[in-house]
Each structure stands twice: as C-alpha cells, then as structure tokens.
Image 1 (cartoon, rainbow, N blue to C red):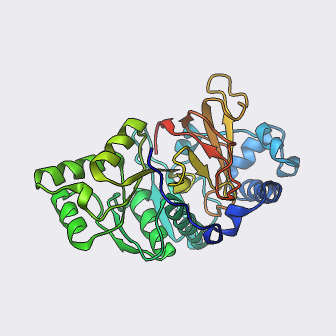
Image 2: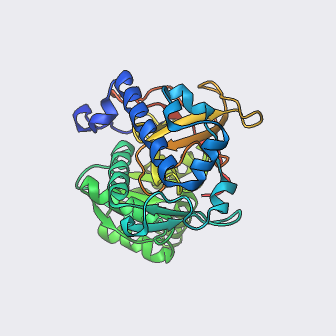
Image 3: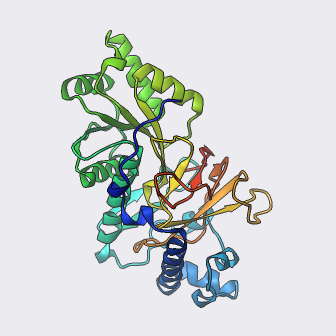
Length: 338
C-alpha cells in the first residue's frame, strides 16, 4: 500500500502529543464534567441515573463509566426533537439532523464553543489525512442538515485551506471544477467519488492526471477493495474519516495518511468504550464489537455511552505513530443510522 507523508510532530495539536497518563487524567476530568452537566440539565439523564442508583459523583475513574446506563437510538427518538439538549435555545448557534433512514431523525444542537471544537477537530483530521494549510479543498459532501458538508467546510477553513463548496450532484460540473480550479484535496463519500471518476472517463479525461492528491472519504462504510480502486483510478491517497451526527459529525476519528491502518480517535473529546454486541459486556481492546462514544466537551447535547450499533473490526488501543497518544479503531463495518 502506498503511504503519504506525515505532518511534522511540531505541527500537531498539543493534545495529539499528550502523554498517555496526561490524556487519561484529562479524559476523567472532562468525563466527570459531562456527567454533571448532563445530570443537571437533561431530564432524561437525571431519570436514567436515578433509576440506576447512580450520580455523577460515583464516577471516580474512567472504568466507573461502564456502570452508567447507555443511551440508545430509541432514547434519542423518544426525546425528539430537543429533549436531549442541555442548554436553552438562546445559546444554540446551529441545528443539524441525522438522515433518519431507520426511523425518527436525530436533531443535534451546537453552541458556539461546540462549533469551534468541531472545526478544530476537523482541521486536525484533514491534516492527519494529508491536507496542509494553503491547500485547495473540494467539498462534495452534501450541505444542509447533514453534517458532512459544513463540517468539512469549516474544518478546512480552520486549517488554513481554500474551500470549493461544490456540494453533491451536477457531476459534470464537479469534473470541470476539479480541472479548472485544481484542488489538491477532495472530501466526498466514496461511492460518489466513484461516480465522479466515471464522469472523468465519459469526458475522456484521465483522473490520474488531475491535481487531486488526497481523498478524504466518509459518511458510509467502505472497504479495502474500494480503497484500492479509488487510489488506482484517481491516483490519490484514499483516507477514511468517521463521525456520526449525534456525537458531533465527521471528525470523531480519522485515518492517518502515513499509516492507513485504522482510524485515530480524538480521545481528548470522545471517550470510546467497546462492548460485546450480544452480551453488552465490555470487550477487550483488539476484539470485534460495538463501539460506544461518550462526548467529553459538548455543551448543547452531551451524550453518555451512545449506543447506536456501530460495529468495528478492532477498537480502542494501538496508539498512533509520530508521537500521537490516542488509540485507533479499525474500519467501521456496519452503522445503522447517521
């Protein structure tokens, strides 16, 4: 597999280089804040914690989180549209929503600090995937209630890139914009990238000769076989990015272009827990299972042990290269709703 160049260690955010013991201490501090914030401001969590005989003060270590009740997709649906919000409407700055492909959509709110965090994590993700300040980034994710387009857009701007907000559709125009404006990075779903490549072929244009060097692909599960096809047909590095709307959007985890061997979870903002999908018991790092995320810094909509059926091949552990201390999860193989 062809690999890309890593950023210099000095270009990383300080949190990416944090020693493991400091990261764990930060996670615990932020986790305890999240539990207090959720309990005080979200009636759903107050009822759930009380029913389990737990209070935020019972979380004295990261391991204690496993005793707290999970948040299911049904919980989110039953509290539609804004029952999971922890701040008054006047403090919100944006609303997004999931696709609702398996039922009621999930409405997600963001305060200004939430949006700032999201942009920062997307900038971190784009850099890890191979983007650099000064790059031109072609965003062909959809804009609107879906988190992909705006998440990519503001993250690229935060990194210091120029954004082409192409959105989805009008595939012929996508090819023309890539040819005329010569972006180095494209952010799009992998299946739509294959459609764009088909349009290159129809136009008689060699996609491998285009300016594209980095493709950041997400919003749907994809395979190593698709990676090989994308890299062969487009002549770029195909890198995976992961997120789900209720946790934040894209930028929860991303592959690093210099390794392409799993998605680095930004554990200073999201605490991952792996469970056996049948028993619900904690699973060891390295096993296949379902991953639960607890937000550590979200103000508008904190989530505790978000359980939405995200299955991964390997999760939690296996620290990244170039001095990053966060763990990785392998490719997502199934996700019921985004």
